Amino acid sequence: MLNISEMKRLLKLNRLSFDRGLTDEEFEQIEQTYSLRFPPDLREMLSHMVPMGTGCPKWRDLSKQGIASMQQYLNKPLQGILFDIQHNQFWYPAWGERPEDNKAAQEIAIQHYANVPQLIPIYMHRYMPMDPYEAGNPILSVHQTDVIAYGTHLEEYFQIEFNKKPYQSMDFASMKPIEFWLDLDRPL
Image 1 (cartoon, rainbow, N blue to C red):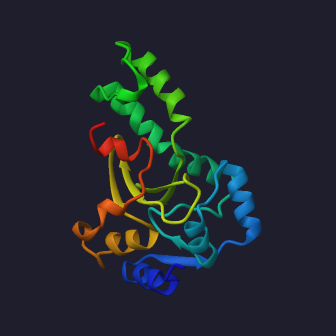
Image 2 (cartoon, rainbow, N blue to C red):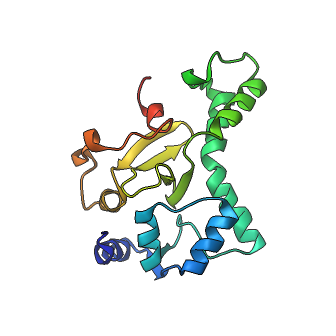
């Protein structure tokens, strides 16, 4: 069970606001629109409050422009990987041998990306993996292929993001392993 009142307090202290929680109907519409499922703890938080402000996903904006904007937000991790393949010679070893041609390498990356856990935006470039579909997934800071854990779970993430808990005190050993994403921060 999340401490929603503490999360609201942290948002207020950091000049972010929040709107009323999403209804079951809104969850259904959002999940269908973006082909995702909110993990149970993120769903719990969003049922009590929807963070608002710069860097917050605009879940309620289902206008044509709002959907296009959110699709860009959802696609940002893939775009970052493709950028690093093109400009920084990034290659994930489990994909096999890297083609010399960047275009061919990007096509292979796109194929493999379809099988990695989808990321759901939380705030700025912080994301929660959708899989495993259970509470307690880590929050990841994702900028291109620079990926670091930024909380072993949602509540801890808020504490770290808003300076209530030092990043160094995170219990990295207890973090759920997340296929692909956490591999980018460590050697395979």
